[in-house]
Image (tube, rainbow, N blue to C red; front, side):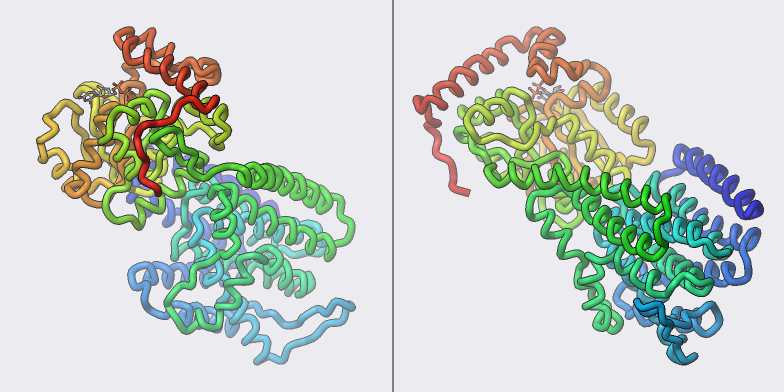
Length: 574
Ligand code: UDP
């Protein structure tokens, strides 16, 4: 154990520091490649240095599976499930095997050697496939792997038996997952074919080691079943067909249901993870007796599950009475959370065709739409219309059609920029004065070193200049931030949509001025009090004329509530 710790702990620290340094210096593709290689290497080195023959064998097979996963990435249409079955057979033929099955009454059912090979091969083959299914949902495979290794580790430590190999494998699994996944494999990252295949064989192999040393087979069969209960219901049904087909049926019915009920992506992943953790913990405890530590684990899981589920239920209740698209005169707003808006935008960037315009509207924008037909029409055709501005959020509440939360354009831009840098989506910045947009590009690069900036350009050009849209299309940008002010930016995007190619365009108003540091954003307390406009007015006093519209807006809201005002404009029924 000392030898194991003396290698694993320093390895974790070195990998952590290496990642930090490389992340700053490399571009995103290089860095991702380096990170995956570093993970495979540290597993190999640990097995060679501190592992037994059995753990070396498992790690070797896992690396072999990761190679299959790499080829799978370039030839996704081949029947890779058969290759994993082959790896499972090889594993069963030369490595540790599942030899018996513990029945609930304490009896053991021993397999014949052929049966044992078949069961082990299937067991090892099923995990890479299952993890790849789970990996269709960003963040899910990583979360469930973390739960699996934590439970395997705890079960090994508290089993009261000498399970040196299982201890080594589960400790390394936890430690390396912590370094290589938790810092990067956040809610929006997939693990990829190659590494899911590797982790699949590792987790399968580790569970077999526990069994071989005495932890009952039923625990380790039921444990992963418990952990993966929800997704496995779907994945297992399809496994037979999966083995012979390359078409993915698409994992996670439950996940899709949660999302369609208005839950955002991170909460849905957390919800499923907590349910799996709860199931897994219950089974581990029932197998291991009244261990204090396992009880603590169960309590933590219950609290975590409670914390995850309560807001979910509250949200569902509130959403029950909420309109999906509250209407305020000629403008309708999407009643979505920041996370939900980001999930939808992610889907639009990855699979969308044409231009998806995300508009951010505040009280002044709603007033503008009353006067300006072209702007109102651009808003109607927006892919998402987000409620930016505390005044608008209050007004909607006052009118009895509240939105879940305020989604400020600048916050949305920052979150989307982070997502784009993680995904490698090229970003284009259009708008503001030349030194401002340059400052914004610099600031984004500093904040997200791996962001790919496809190009930028100031927002002072003739509306008839078609070269701007062409340049953007040719830059290969997938995300376009347009900061030319309302309504210019939305109208420009709508008019030039045909030229822009396939991308998500976000109208962000004066965000470049703030991101570049030319203007200061109002402190949070001003924002909460709805005084962001005043803070801006102090910095840009010439805005006073524009801000007079805020008074008109407030007046019209009161009249609307009393039923004395209605938009004269007709809205297209959508
Ligand atoms: N802007 C621009 N082109 C123009 C006019 C304005 O790029 O023709 C830029 C301006 O420099 C500022 C941003 O648009 O950075 C936002 O302008 P404004 O404050 O008027 O927009 P709002 O935040 O009110 O939508």
